[in-house]
Amino acid sequence: MPEGDTVYRAARLLDRALSGRVLSRSDFRVPQHATADLSGSTVLETLSRGKHLLTRTDAGITLHTHLKMEGTWQVYRPGERWRRPVSQVRVLLEAGDVSAVGFQLGVVELIPTAQESGAVGHLGPDLLGPDWDESVALSRLTNDPDRTIAAALLDQRNLAGIGNMFMAELCFTSGIHPQRTVGEVADLPRLVRRAKQMLEVNKERAIQSTTGDLRPRERRWVFRRDRSPCRRCATPIRVAMRGEPGRERATYWCPQCQPGND
Image 1 (cartoon, rainbow, N blue to C red):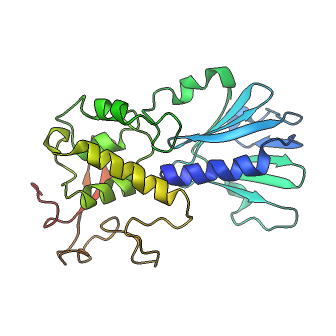
Image 2 (cartoon, one colour):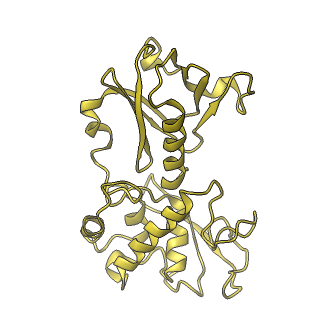
């Protein structure tokens, strides 16, 4: 699933392509909005809120989208060939010589701009947003000290923008087993600051890396490196499906660098 830095870049792409332009065509290929038409309205801005995208128009309507697992936004100029099949298109916005195409979007909603809080108001402080507040994030994280740190970091109500990859990498670089409880984390503020630093660095580059190495097989410490040797100690990385019922995810860790009850 795309993480906060990826969604931030998607918002920036749409903002640069569409803001200030009048929509000449809108096509929503989802049942609930199949007859909606935003043509003639001007796009004011697109911004990210955690993993959510908000495209606002002067008609007082906001297009709320979420990439979920497979979604992406791409921008094309006349004559450019789309890099995904037409069958995957969920939203098409055209403004002059620009086409913004949303493929396999997990959420597509048209909501009054004044009611955006109904879609994103539950989110905690956004690690990449103007509302970032470390103290609020820490307060929410510590509200349930018996919860695993993995679950607490992934809960967007605590702080918005961390997905499974960043969670795994943060736990490794902090030497914390992902099944440790929040109350067992000795320096939670440092962990949260590291999370912000990771996302800030990665929002500026198309290739995600937590190691600082951009080579294809060298970009991660533990994520999706199950059974590969740990980069620090050579112990095989472990993976297990963990998490709350119905929300299980693959969890990666080094049993030597991140001691815990495996």
